[in-house]
Image 1: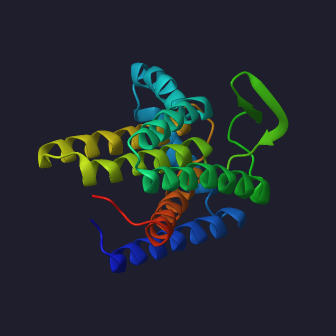
Image 2: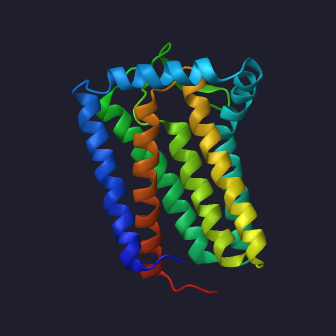
Length: 215
């Protein structure tokens, strides 16, 4: 696994990227970049791929992530991997709270129609802002956690590589799908990925301090 030295480096770089993207976005310096990248992605993506992305984006929805998190958490508790269960709670609940606070703080409007927060058929009369992308944050955090489990416990090296690549591809597809369905700007996605990486490694470090690891 990654040493503490490199973890700290990754965290600082990720946080730095988030701060820079946030500053530039608040100053409206990313408008041209966002529009050109959105135009390029939509123009180069075939119609069937766009339809597929509409289905892929559902995988990052709050409902799907909550269900997956509950299943994984239950399995970890069943196998008495309490250190991972604790980390999963920190990553998921903390990540949701962090995303909500950032959205309320920056209140960036979406490229498409403004929506309200919805989950399991219930809606809150609270505007769902764009920055940073909630779908992307939830996906990056949960799949990063699964990558951690894969690298530590998947067994054969080939299996580790295959599963890790699959999770990374799924992460990327969900992120890109948010642009194609006209719900986010590219900088929303970049900010979400960078702050998610920072939060994930922060939770990992805190968990290792609080609870010993069983290998």
